[in-house]
Image (cartoon, rainbow, N blue to C red; front, side):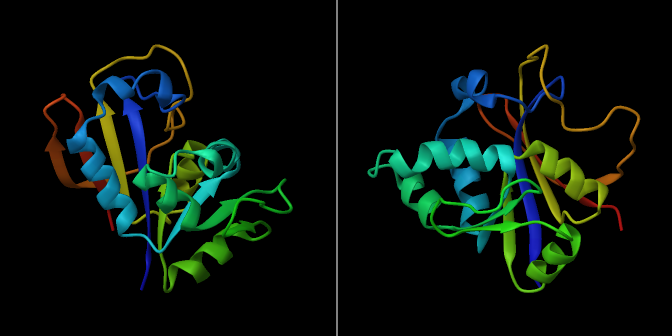
Length: 178
């Protein structure tokens, strides 16, 4: 049986939007190893439409000497979208229609990893499809931006693991309660 595991950079105030503007000063070898380990355990990437667009615009032309470049470009990618008909980035397939049914089918034998894609992660949590939620909580309040959880909505989770990096970032791993 496979799984769906998601990883997000998140600020103390819950902001997950535009981490490229606030998280890099905390990114070091320790965090790189944790992110690499999350990605290495996956058979395929699961992306929302906006994250797909950003990644597809960047990674095909990224520095080939960067080990993440080959990993990102070579990985099988599934893009959840109701508006995208075809995905041009190599090894990409669009999932539309009955997304939950398609993901449950993929989850039977694939380890799917969600990188970024906070809207998709929120929906996956609401649908109880996430097996592990990795939050890399940064010691900074951003003040504005998209947050992960919908205000007023209750999603119970259980803590599986907690690690504090030397930069003050906490890597919290949550799973479903039942």
